[in-house]
Length: 118
Image (tube, rainbow, N blue to C red):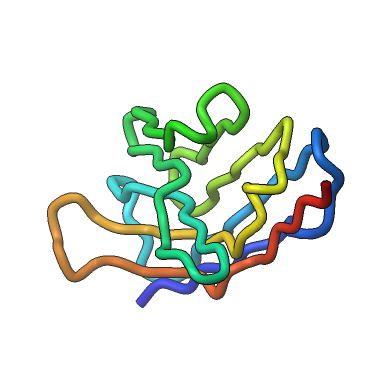
């Protein structure tokens, strides 16, 4: 089992910045892919950004150039730096850890609210 605890959400004005953090504990593997997803009211959960153990990153087109993702080598912490925030970034942000080989290894945090005021 893996436990994920997110922090760093909150209310910010348009153009502001927030930094989300996720700490993983339990049966953590260095090879895990770590990432962030978000879900706005009435919408499906969507990818924001992921990062592999080798440092390969993937971003949603809507956040490219504004958001960055980083992690530690142990695979126990992942951060999402969000700059130039827009009202459409308002959502609950979820931390995710999954393994690219073992299909059943897929864990989610409880989510943290990000609200961007216009």
